[in-house]
Length: 215
Length: 288
Image 1 (tube, one colour):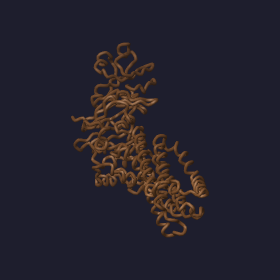
Image 2 (cartoon, one colour):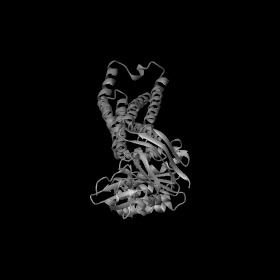
Image 3 (spheres, one colour):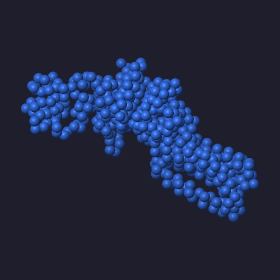
Image 4 (tube, one colour):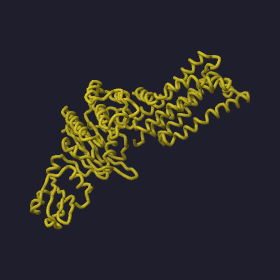
């Protein structure tokens, strides 16, 4: 049942899917070449995936807001909880697909695009979870129209903020690994655990908000 | 007769409107027309039944079970046709069906296919390109393809041409030929109900004003026309609504025998559903 709702989001986003596929191949390459791969692929991947997700999620949200389809679906045996869960799974699905595309591109041109290590992947997932973990409940509470400016501004500043942070870390001789003086295994796991925590917490808040909405 | 749906003491407050103690029930095998002027509370009531609007108080039972406590199971028995469709218009007919159908445990693809063929729906056509009539037929095809026992329709005829409206009424009558089917049909176009409705429920300003069998309602009410001379303080009280001009009057009564006894020389006609509705909601206050 939830799978069919995820499929619905994919159908709603299909207009941009091909473009996003091309973007997911080209953008990390461009960013890594421009920044000299000082982030080990992290910057190229996280900015790309954030933009891909932002575009696709916004396309879906815009359609839902315009056509009020969720109201019709909520009148069927689909539960509101399933509708919300599908949104989070959609985000995760696009993230996984973006990672697969990145990994294939990286395998084809390893000189330009470094392979992501587990920690970098985890931190990327964590940042995505943090962004959408805040945006999705806000959207359920205040509606797409009101929240879209906040989400746009947050996305708009990332290409300027992320490289700056990374350059600062680099110039101060710090790495992401060094910042965490805990065993490597736990360091690798920590972003995934935080992602799960944020994801479930955000999902529970969104379900709570949406179940009390008049549609 | 078996009660299919029972709404009791339903309340919902909005800042500018409220449903106040709405109670009625739907009987198996009946088409119940839910009538009222625009803004009377029809859509809010229907949305409350479907769980789209959360009630402040009251109980809504389908087959004796609270809908909000058995949502998934009970909604399998309901077919829905909403005003404006609420479809993702950028999807094709096939894509929307592929989203809609898996919600129902008893979806019947063969039935769906027979409806799309009958209505001439092209599966790869975008919903946004469908005419209002075709969109309604598509909504009907989706609503009737999972063997629903109760069909709930919110203003299905609004904006449709007379031919499509008539076709829709025929589809409803066809649906009712099957054992155990029930229809709840909101409209402000009361003429649609002349042909098909068994029971009429009138809502006004968020309150149920009337709930009666259509034939009984039409038999017990009369449209009275006559000379103004026939009116006095006592006879005026016999009318639910009364409109006087310089020469005559026209009014709706639910006391036909009293009118016959007390008002000689007046004309007693069978009212339309609209005459009765307007008499109760006071929507026809201009002089003739």
